[in-house]
Amino acid sequence: LMELNTQIFGKGKPLIIIHGFLGMGDNWKTIAKKLADHYEVHLPDMRNHGKSPHSSDFSYDIMVQDVNNYMNAHNLDKVRLIGHSMGGKIAMQFASEHPDLVEKLVVVDISPKLYQPHHDEILKSLKKLKESHLESRTQAEEILSETIKDKGVRLFLLKNLKRETDNKLSLKPNIDIFIQNRHEIGKALPEKCKFNGETLFIKGENSSYIRTNDKKLINEHFPNFKVIEIKNSGHWVHAENPRDFLSQLVDFL
Image (cartoon, rainbow, N blue to C red; front, side):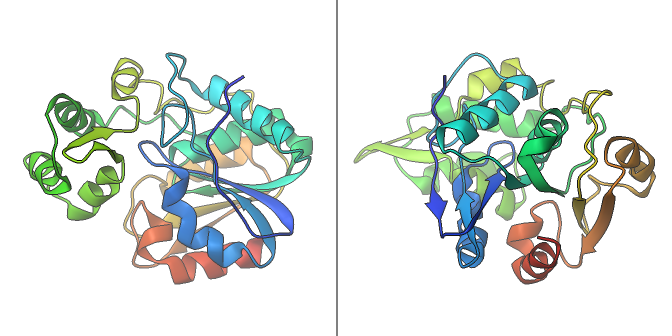
């Protein structure tokens, strides 16, 4: 059994937030603290991410199993489940396989469909970081900026650095496994998956991950769904417009 690294905030009904690809629970700390008055918020790092253990097994099936083990380990029997991007795919599948364990489901800026691999540039750049002798964040950012023009994306990725010694930085996530399994991330939700509980899809206004014609597919898996759009935000909705994101989230929860 893999023990996931986690951070837990607040008291109240349990709520789990599952981060996206190349992210970590830490990305959600600001939101978690805002929810902590009413909920016990869990921010686990998924396997091969953040401070959680590395493993050569990497698929949605196994990460769904990790979430189930996590709930058992923390004695959680019914949760509100939020997932962003890759985490949204994990959350959708988890809710379908364990409907009795999920009170409400929130899926942030991802739909159940297949996405073609589109992280290749990012993975290549991170591989380059991994192979460089990194002494500072500035040096790491310079390497990333050769291929990744968006500063927001660079800053998000730089959160994956950890300091080994005074003059050596390394990467937390398991980049080689991600490269080997790059087709796993975009996989569609298995056809048989269905969850009848209340489900909210939150879309970033400027993001193209959820499209209008995805609603038919969403409805097949999640008949009790609604989609709302958050203004002035892209794929990282919770970070780009936290105020509107939070008010919609709290309303639904």
